[in-house]
Image 1 (cartoon, one colour):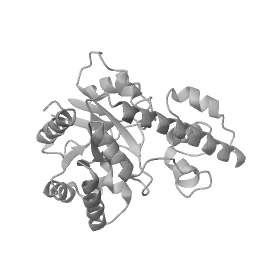
Image 2: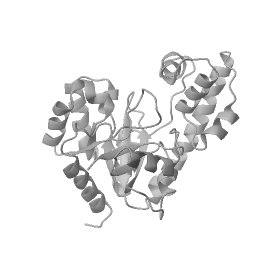
Image 3: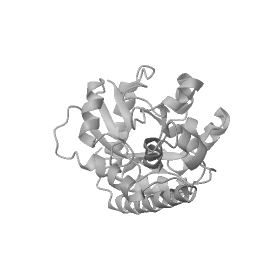
Length: 280
């Protein structure tokens, strides 16, 4: 099995449509995938009833306000009307935030057109769309530079995101039949012991898994995190966080070479999803 449980489409800030992403992932050898767009289910929903070359799990990625880099993945098999309502509200706040960031950049002298960015993205506008527009205009060399110099946290054009706390999001996902998984823990930029303490606290609030096999943890060494998470009794997941062909994320299936227990881990996640949906 070659899973990729963290991927983005044009419904949020990816560059491929849902169908294009599935076909691309399959061409790279991925055998099961999840669409986890930011603050929207539109990408995953568009594939309902569509024959795809590989199974597609419905997911979502939520940004948390507790600390920098904190994101929560949710995987589920239920309709989850309450969760979907909250996600739609978050998506609207995301749009408002993107417009304010663009306004800040315009005041700084960058000639950007928010409506043009919105129409081109085809989904919910995010910072990555703005960064790509800056690259196209020649204002920065790449999207990393846009974040580092202008729109990243603490930079002049940055606007904080209106989002949930872990204390709000974890029970929201659980009572709507979704399995909450901590995304890319390396992006919390904490020492291993601090990361462990944070995860233990979130586990008490309802966290069910951790995305161990994400490109950002590779330099730290996957085995240490893998052992820690399994000892805590949490689900182990992994994914490339694919958005496009840049250096900020991985390519489809890129973490699978190191993920030796992928088969049993995906089976455990699917079992947890069925149980959360009342199917087991």
